[in-house]
Length: 201
Image: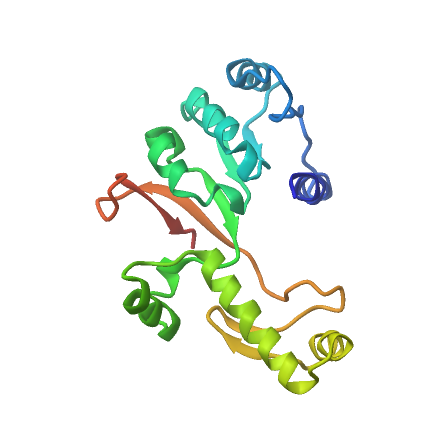
């Protein structure tokens, strides 16, 4: 996950005329967040991009804390996590993460209302994506209940179903045809952490 995200981000940066000042592997033994942030600042970096995954969340939180808002922070969907709000606190304010769906933008949808009643709380993008995957799979199985039939149904031009996040359809590559949304950490009295992820308009 991290290497794929890193590759895509690096390509986009260079395509837009930017550059990558340096890279750090937070999973390496002996990774020191303070040294990494200090070196990035010395190299003239303006932004830290955290392409971590759930197994390296603690290292990402260390970077967020020692950065103390000096450099802008960007991250992938694994950082759309309550631990970022709790442990990152004021140091995470302004950090922007890319996610496929944001609850705050869809509070009145049937899916959100029903899930609140069922589970007694809000859901996140992972729940919405799992719901959409289940709906798409069920529709494909109805169309052709074999292994090959499901693949054929999902890859057929024009295949689409209505899911929690809108219309579910796929690209020829098999990836979901859906734009990512950006969410930023902002102060909020709506959560027990004092911060929340808010849609970037």
